[in-house]
Length: 302
Length: 318
Image (cartoon, rainbow over all chains, first blue to last red; front, side):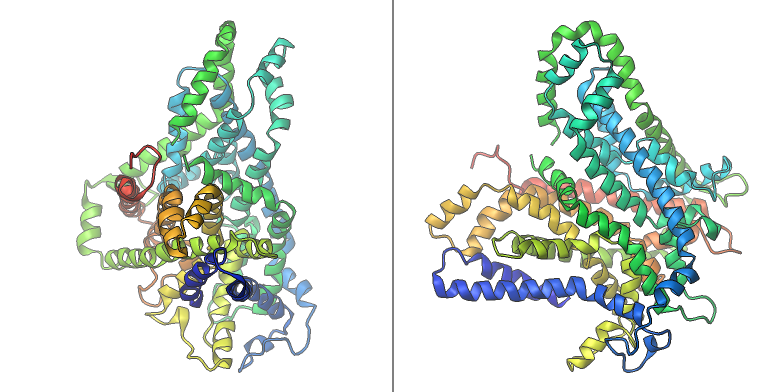
């Protein structure tokens, strides 16, 4: 909260760096680095603190006054914590659900994008607008009818409600992104392939998919993030704890049961493991994150 | 905003007019390619939209058939339900706190990261980091950070000799605390603003510098007008997202203390999917969903309608 007051003015101050002469520039640079340090601290200190909690013993967490660093380093939390939360089982569940919904979401969005951008058919505009329009529909509108529908066809308490929608073009944003990307590819490529006798499936699989690699990698990352982080849907659709993904499992571990205080040091140690897959993907594929959202920014600009 | 690209595709289509003998197979192939998305649209968008509107007009517990009650649910919402107005107020308070702060902070952060300093990429990466992390992981972490007795924030404030607070457990500080946790993910707003800022032609800044414009007038006369379409997009995105906030209040406070953080989404969830032993009120929850939906549509419509007053576009002859 304290950042609110300082940042805009400082950002304004550093803006004035270019026209100024040498001495103010030094002041501006110092100010910039001070603010930069503050921003980095706000973002990183909570995470570092999480690690120190993960290393504290179970009782040391509740020491008063609290200590910033652990008195004794309890590395065993990283083994006992995941065990207490059934981490391996939840991790496997999360990987299956996320993996399948990434594949489904990206594949069907790419297919729809290909048809909308490169094939001529009646209703093409209508479908495009319907897909884009459905981006504005809040997810909550579907929650209750879909819940009842899944229940009546026996999908309640299975992973199907979390996976099948992805295979049916679940994310209209992806369809939009795919179409934008396909529009930018020269049409002479399809025509050359057609002259060589390739059908649409061949063109799509062996010509278009390699060409659109940045687009579907971006989508895959966004889909991974969305599914890995999803909390409301698994919370609503999954009843038995053996089927939960990590998001629900982790949250339930610290929700207060009658009279039992949650074990924070176990929790924080496991929390770090839960964060690792998205963290690794983020650092490995940073430019796709920026690209994907940048595309959203620039496509809407004009 | 899509009309531009449509124009482009029409001309391109015309250029390959010679391919018309393939038109028939194109249609078949096209419908095969979009079939999954079309089925998905009908099942997951079309059906629930109609069905939820119908359910909003019924009394329905999910076990027996829905009973049509007309506007009874809405009458109960607006007149007798003691929990509805507090939920609406909490939602409004959250939106009013979160949206302006998220936009101002996001833009400030984007401008801060849009400068040439060694290490700017590190700041950008770290500022975006919280967005990448699982919501449940970061929210639970913050729940502990905000713990009044053993949490990090009060520990630091105490060491610095500053006043501490009850944060999530105080009736008046609970909602600002929830918003503070949401604002930790301001990197998401920043990254879209950053893309917009980088699209502003540098000649404009150079021209302004030649004319001797100060930092403030550069910001208000060049930067802000040039990125105004993105500001509009962000207002819509952030407001609709804020109206549907669920994870943070659910995990941090579960609506408490009192009704202070019981936002509409939480109230919908509790009516539709109550804890064991209570009967779900699916019709009533659907009516709440439709109130929320109408608010969202109204926000989008009003923002879009009044956008011409303050967004910049090339076509205006100024």
